Image (cartoon, rainbow, N blue to C red; front, side):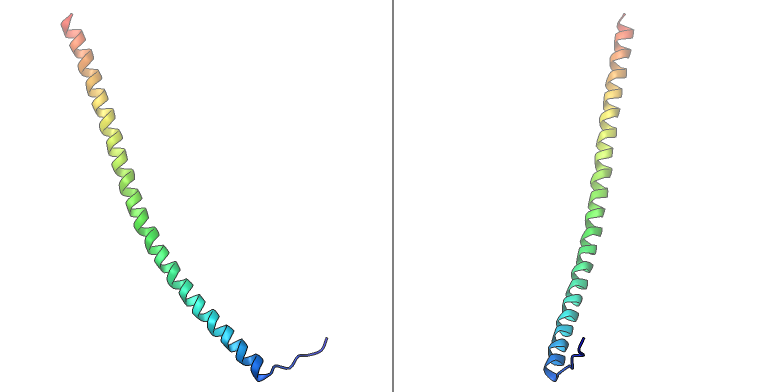
Length: 79
């Protein structure tokens, strides 16, 4: 296999590609940082919605239990 000699033109093209790659990597790093921040915000919102849903479920069960106990007590004392 023959050894290829690097010309100035080839080195210039390589330098341009390296520079473009460095810029792309920097843009990707910024995009990842933004995505991470968005994920944190969404996680906070999701946790709030989950907690609110749990409170609603607990309230519903509490109301059902209260209504059931009230109905039973009313039926027992009417006899």
